[in-house]
Structure formats: C-alpha cells, structure tokens
Image (cartoon, rainbow over all chains, first blue to last red):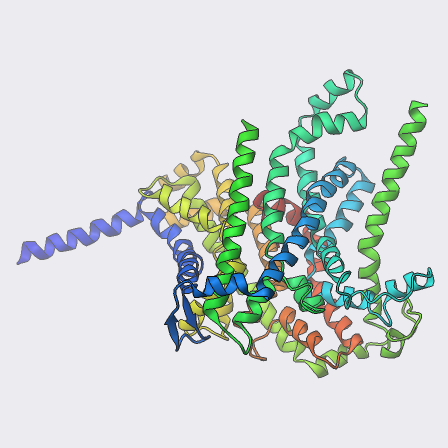
Length: 306
Length: 276
C-alpha cells in the first residue's frame, strides 16, 4: 500500500517537475493559443463544412440533413451567383491597383527625405480609420444633394451624379472607396521592401548608365518579387472577402449590384430569414475559391522563384 | 537636355504624389470640419469646406441619439482586454516556438500556420454558433476571447524572440528563475518594440472591427462604437451632423495613437502582414 502511494506521488512529482523544466514548460506556453485557435478557428471550419449539408436555424434547435441540396440551391440562386460576379469585379479592379499602382507610388516615395516621409504619413492615414467612419465620410462627400464632390462635379457641368444609386456606376464607387481605404498598407509594405534592396545593385546599374526608370525595372522590380507575391496573395484573399465598405455605403444596393458574397452570407445568416446551413454552404464555396486561387498563385510563385 | 528631362520627371511625380495626398487629406479634413458645423450649414448647397457656424451641438446630439458613452466604454473594454490578453497569449506561444525544443512542436506550429489561411469571413457563422453555444452571446467574453489568439502575432513574436542570444536564458536559469520568470522578466522586455507593434495593431484592429461585434454583440448595451455608429447611420432618419461627430470620435483616438506610434504601425504591418 505504502509503496504504491509513494510511487504515485513520485509520478506526480515527476510530471510536475517535467512541466517546470525547460522542455516541458513549452506546453503550457503554447496551450492557450492552441486551445483558442482550435475552438474558434479550426473547429468552426469543420463545423462550417459539415453544416453545409444541413438545414439549420440560428439557435440550432431545428437541424435537418439535406445532403447536397444547399449546394444545388446555391448554384441556382441568382442572388448568390450575382454576389460572386460582384465580388469578382471588385477583386479584378482592386487587386491590380493595389499590386501595381502601390508599387509605382512606393518607388517614388521610398527614398528617406522629409517630403517623402510626409507623403508616406498621409497615405497611411486611411488605414487607421474605421470602415464605419470612412463609410460615413464618403457617403456625405458623394451625397446626391449636399455632397462636396457632387457639387464640384456639377459646377464643372457634369450634372448631379447619384453615386450611390446607379446600377452601373455604384460598384465602381464602392471599389474606389475600398482602394482609398487600404492603398496605404500596400504602399508602405512596398516601401519597406524597396528600402531593403541592396544599394550596391543600384550603384552597379548606375555605372552601366541606367536611368531612374531602367533602375526601377531592372533592379527594384526583381529585388522585391517576394513582396509582390505577398501583396498579390493577401490582397486577393482580402478583396474576395469584401464586406465592411459595402455594408457602410450601399448595403448591397441598388438592386443588389454591389452585394458581395460575404454581404449575402451575412444577410442570410443573421437576418429574419436566417439559415445557418445555407450561409455555411455559401461560405464554403467562397473558401474553396479563395484556397484555389491562393494555391495556384503559390505554385506559380515557387516555380518562378526557382 | 538630360537634366531637363530629369527635372520634368521629378515635377510630374511630385504633382502625382500631391494629388494622391490631397485625395486622402481633403475628405478627412472636410469631415473633421463638418463635425463642428450646424446641421443647416451641412445641408446647404453649395456645400462649405471651412466651418462658418462653429458649434458643438453635433456631439451633444450624438449623445442624445445613441448611447455613445456606453459604446465608447464597450470599445475601450473590447480593445483593451483583447490587446492585454493577446500580448500575453501570443508572446507565450511565439516564445515557445522560437526558443524551446519539445515533442510535437512541428505539428503544433503547422496547425498554427494553417489557421492563418482560414479567412474569418468564411468561418464567421460557425464561430458565432460556438460562442452562442458556450453561452457567450452578447457578453464581453464572447466578443473578446475568440479574437485573442492571432497566428500573425505569434509569428511576429516568434521572429522577435528568435533573435535573442542564448546566454540571456542560461544566465537567468543559473540564477534560479522559473521558466515563467525567464520568459516574463528577462525575455519579454527584450522584445519590447515587437510587443508594442502587436499592442498598437491589436488596439487599432479591435477598435475598428465592424463585422465581429455586429454578429456577436447585437444588444444595444453591448455595441461597440464602430458597430453602434454603423447601425445608427443605417437608420432612415439620418442626422448628418451627429454622424460626422460620431465618425470623428471614432477616428480621433486612432489618430493620436498613429501620431505617437507611426513607426510601430508601419513596422508591425510590414513584418507580420497583420491588417490592423
């Protein structure tokens, strides 16, 4: 009896000692983050994929297995297909501007002098602002009656443009606001990359008689390739998930012409017509699209970097 | 000729940069100035740029229309507690991955890496359900806990810890400090600047967060400034002056944070890929 207790005690002490040791303590250092990521990221992903095969209300009181019905429904749901189209238009405009436009601007402001630092500080300003305030601001600037820009354009003889209620124009307005909001991040990330380019490469190019433009094309662009890929991939994934700016400016209107996929998912999951199963299905389709694009780009990147 | 070309190129680029700068600054300035205008002046056509009818009525109006004080308090709690927990939790993980050898490290690390690829918008529905089933719907914990562990922050801290010399740890161990003591008292202070990056990005991110509070804190008394204001603007009878005032209140603290911590904003976003 006695020896058994001691052995048990020994075991306990040894375990305690192990978790206090340099190696064992690692587990309690990673435990909180692993638990949290598991509960709030990994499990939801699996729940999401399995819930796509169910019909469920918001509180999960009524759950019915429906097989692939939700997927069939999604691909015949014109509002969902339209939301994909809207999302692709957003992405097709925003990504090139962020990836190439920001690169050019970054090259112009990469050198560390007072003027450039000033420009950088300004360009970054929208990044720190909430989507809410940005939405309020642009809604007023482009307001059809009292907007500042509306007035400026009408006094130039362009007439009063109804920026937020035009089935053709509004999507571009929303895209512009979205670019306005996050252009600064891409530019600043490029600036950091450009500043890290080895200065001797520029010296060598100068010796060969290369001007500013030649230096940009032959030295800067190849040197910041990893950053280019990084921005391309993150921007692409980000644009495909556009929500905040749409919610704040148009709410998806007019006539769903600016309703992105995430906006539609949001309204199907958290409104009166709540359907968690169907919302999950659409989320999963979006997930597959984002993953496919990311993996394809990643492989392309690896092939090119080799 | 060559010199002339260079000068004209420089001028052209300066003009382009100035136009973009104006495109950023003019709208923001106009909004800030409009927050102090009488409703009548805001609605006047042609619109004014500078404030002619200086008033603080809009701020009082915001307070009358929505529980702005409560919203601000909620935002402070959300941003403050999330950030405090995030620094501890993500630094701990970053520290272990950077400096410790242990069984299963690869698996744990890859899992963490993989969660970075899961877009929040894709899992927002089930994450809401998890929070709901845990009884945390419309509570501070429901708002905060799911936002604490951030893979990007773990990588940021891991990179910072990896750069420290081994001697530091060994000396502390000889002095008889516990493993927690080594981490908390010796190592963490060494990576102060990365920790500040994390703090600033986390405060900014949660202060501006719109989607998550909207999903999980729908009760009027639980709304944050960002989502409370968004829902206020969404109402039909919109008050422009009050909206401007609210927007300015939402931006002002971040602007102050930016003025003092610009370096950390830029460093943090460039090195961790975290978007606010």
